[in-house]
Amino acid sequence: MSIRNCALMLALCVLFLPLGKPVAGLEQQDAGGFRKLVPVQPTESPGKIEVTEFFSYGCPHCSEFYPLLKTWLARQPRDVVLLRVPVSFNRPPWENLQRAYYALQATGDLAKLDGPLFEAIHEQRRQLFDPRSLADWVGAHGGNAEKFTAAYTSFGVNNQTVQADRMAENYAVEGIPTMAVNGEYVAQGDTLAQILDNTDKLIARVRAERAAMTPAAKH
Image (cartoon, helix red, strand yellow):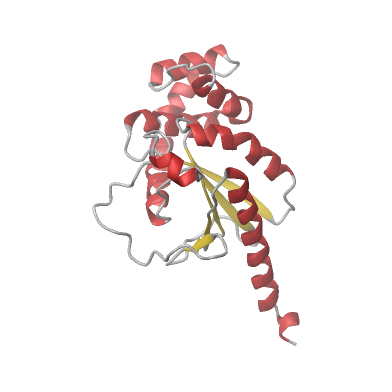
């Protein structure tokens, strides 16, 4: 069974965006294992090939994907950057986890607690879905609970969560984890490994397209 089909059977794995209508301009899956984004979305890394991962700490597939993603990222060349975008799909527990990601990022504790938070939720079955439980967990695992709480409720984190969900809507994200490349393509696949393999192919495609547009390539 494919990742997408399996996720449809698990409420915590795939959620449909509450848009109320089809997303205009969304093309069908290409035979090459991707779909093209219409319109192309803006990126934040000029001169780089930006890969965007849409995920949630509450998603079992995202937890399984996390170590694969870390290994994948470690072998990427310098022209590739990863932007991770936590999504809520309008679910309050997932919105709290979304806020937790940005709060950990703001306090400098993300690198230390990113993986452990997945582990706590999916392996230890900890119910870390409310602000108090999250702050207590952060404090018990070497983070600064007071700074975490301040960041969690800050205007900056609130704005980031709104922007993250808007991005998920603009990218027509229906299931997670989702990998997008350069605001132009969304990788697809029947397994997590295949999604990463197709991500690599899309990176190579973007790199080749850029090379073909250079002045030297035109002569």
